[in-house]
Amino acid sequence: MDVFLVSGGGPLTGSVRVNGAKNSALKLAAAALLAPGRTVVDNVPDIADIRVMGQVLQHLGVGVHHRSGVLTLDVPEQVGDSTPADLASKLRASIVVLGPLLARCGHVRIATPGGCNLGSRAIDLHLSGLARMGAQIDYGAEHVEARARRLVGADIELPYASVGATENLLMAAVTASGTTRLGNAAREPEIVDLVAFLQSMGADIRGGGTSEIEVRGVRELRPTRHVVIGDRIEAGTFAVAAAVTGGMIDLHGVRPEHLRLALSKLQAAGAEVTERDDGLTVHGGGELKAVDVVTLPFPGVPTDLLSAFLLLSSQARGTSMLTENVYESRFSVIDEMVRLGADIHLEGHHAIVRGPARLAGAVVRATDLRAGAALVIAGLVAEGETVVTDPYHVDRGYTDFAARLSALGGDVRRADVVPSLV
Image (cartoon, rainbow, N blue to C red; front, side, top):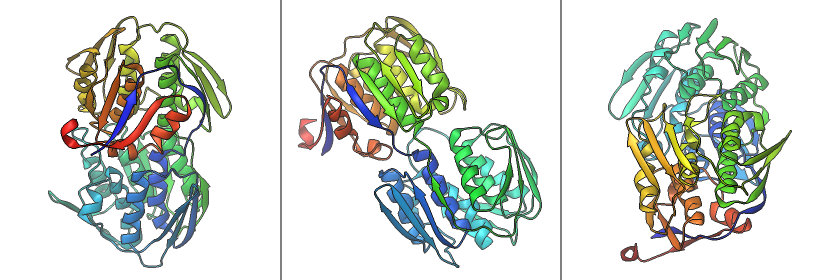
């Protein structure tokens, strides 16, 4: 059994180069399907999710080469129009090939996507938006099928600011006939990055980063080259790691404005944050104080940082309330943190955290990607040895997580152990 073995110890100190944003790179890879020819995407992280997306694209006929952060995609004149269930089940983001494939092929059949088990994340908004653009939809328990000779522009008001639906509908709209207006669109930095990518391909888009995006369809797009933005979630994870271990970490390759509210919560908790144009420094030498956190779509605190803030709150003096408004199963990490000694009680979609708690090493399970990363960092705070099982979740979003924490002074390693021992 492959696990993380973590021993508590001193502060994390040093410098980290933040990788390209997973949640952007995956969507840019899908968007490359819109134009035959060679598209090159720089600053792409070497993580499991990217590798699975590469396999999805290869199944569609795309030549894929990923080395040293450069992802080269050779898109043929004729691409496939279906994705296999075994790959889709590993990757929630595989749903984003729906829009570009429908635009390119006029027909698409994709297997129901998987990924982290975070509760209900229905794709109804994707499908209803495509239907407004003229697609005929067949939605079964294990597949989604859509047809449209050519999509037409439409006025689409999203009932909530879904990142995935905004991305899929953007990619479908760029070659549709006429103008599409997306109301209540997601405003995340990854959306802005996708808009810039599509514009470099020749798309006519206005309003990226605002709640209303207008897309004027063009006849065709061209291949492009693009650099992915820094991963704000990875940066936030390391920032919390500095705070809870009482260390100091310099983060490079990320824009502080992409984490503005999360950083303000870190400062309110007692961490020192110094911002630069291309990064930030987080110093956690003082006593941490309780702070309330509410996850919301951008520019709010991202749901992907909730697990990290649960850990932070467990080490802060006083009582914190953390409210999750995006994914109902994000709190699955609480049981694992309680095993380590955290004092956390769940009341509906609020977690009440009392601290500071004295954590002690235990065997815990990574219930999802972000939970796994938070549990590894919790092991650095706990006394004794912590074993984090199911580390493949962490591999989906973090490159060489153990090695990078070790380079900062943490006692973290990957190891194979006999299952009966855990």
